[in-house]
Image (cartoon, rainbow, N blue to C red; front, side, top):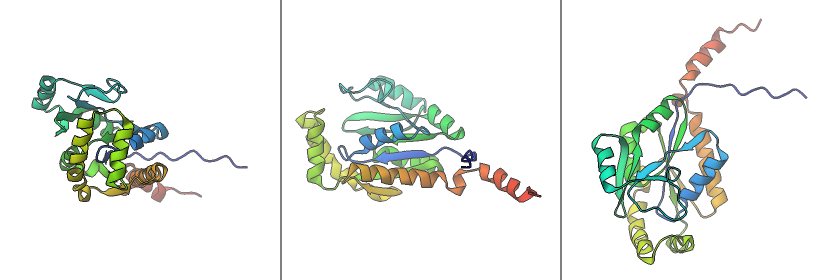
Length: 218
């Protein structure tokens, strides 16, 4: 059997994969599974003023900052986007993202609609946005309780805000209903593969096609 040929490498610009959803709809689980399955994808680690949950690790899930520290980053334009969510601040460090895009590395953003809007405004050509919807509001509530990481007061706040968050679904490129995690995960992976093949994301195609046209196989 003839050995498989090595894949042809064509230079491309990285993409910014934005995944948003109301709390409990599954974006963080899907994001975690993507990072485990796709070596070409790395997480954009946000900074936040939210208190760290017991299961979270500094520098892996978030960079936890005081409000004063966050305001200093914002004042020096060191954040590509920022938002206030449920009374806490979240933001994306600028330098790491811009370096990744130029080097052709894909970055994953697990952020809310406010952050997604700012990324679209600043780097629209690089952004691929996906909104994850729950199958029902009752299931969303059940998932928040099963997570067992938030107080009843926090859960009530997240549920109250979820309808306003869902109202922004039209602002996203793709919509995935998470009625089954495996199906939703497969849909998101298909979106990523298709977006990586877009002509306008692959500047290396010019050189590749020119090579084809000038090649003499004889």
